[in-house]
Image (cartoon, rainbow, N blue to C red; front, side):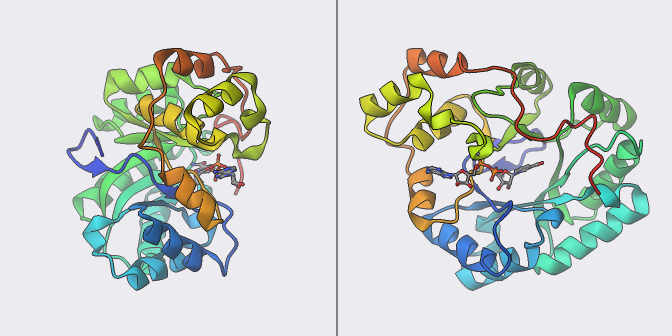
Length: 273
Ligand code: NAD
């Protein structure tokens, strides 16, 4: 568990459901809960909140034992749209509250993210979400919402993997008490992360998979992550990462893979609707 700056706790290792095929999400989330995950990361834009909610209900696990995150989509910025979006997400999930509600992208072209952030504060006060945070916000975006509201986001969920290690944002988060969540923690399979030279040696030294090594690197850096897999075997493998520890030399050799290489969109220019 990681303590958030508002006093709430979040399981450091969760399960993400981006691009989980509709019609499969319920089974996959149910399997993830059976494997032991207690933190599910979804979003309105993933079009599977309903299935996530059904899986949570079907699991029989008490609601308070599962940490649920969802996100406000780019077309829902602004006070009124934000409140409507939150209510729609709760309804689809079949929940009274989520544990964490995030602004998915800042959409600086709209210049509404400050207003949206103030709406998230109201949702927290109303008990619709336990914690509020942002995703894909740069230091400048975060500084602006803090200046306008006086509230520091509990988390910033950002693209983060060995080739894009986000040192500056991580340092900034540390200085402000903002927990960092990694999206695409395994590089989304968009480059040959697992084939990179230091990983093979570390894999051999510990007798684990390359994915497990990368997950350990995140965990030991204090990062919250929720790798996605549709296969039960990989889900279980990704959760089985507490029986070994990377040495500081091994951590440093993975740190050295940083190339400032994004595989996803740039928050300053993403205007997807
Ligand atoms: P990821 O880095 O978790 O990569 C997922 C891919 O890695 C899967 O398609 C799978 O093929 C592969 N994989 C998983 N486990 C493996 C294993 N043990 N061995 C080999 N390959 C394995 O990428 P992601 O799913 O995009 O990111 C994780 C979560 O982050 C998402 O599901 C979503 O919840 C969140 N996310 C958020 C944003 C955002 O803008 N906030 C963007 C993308 C993703």
